[in-house]
Length: 167
Image (cartoon, rainbow, N blue to C red):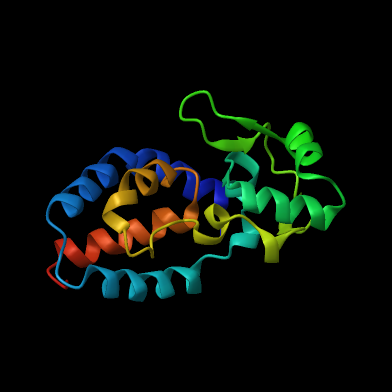
């Protein structure tokens, strides 16, 4: 998988794919959740997150207080120490996010997460294309197209399926 090539393709196609996702949001095809599951499985057979880790390198998850507590205790910090060292409140929306990227838990050598079993729900659900509330998060999916090869591949597959009448 050539991550740089997929990032460039995602940047080039973002506008077109974002428009498509808006159409799907307004008029979802019948069986969208089932389609997403099928296309998700196809996507994961083609894309390996460990080849990329852009989600951890270039983006930040949102953290719930319970997740902060769980992770902090696991790495030997109090929740306050963890927050002060790694987190901040996003001034745009009030979300709790990492102060910087890449994520403090990303092992840059193998692209694995040091707290994988304890990772925030935002990480667990990423890249969000197999969620039941797909239409509610389609704007997030659209924003991730140039950053996440899996998202690009998935949305291209969905567009192909829907526009070629296979949905």
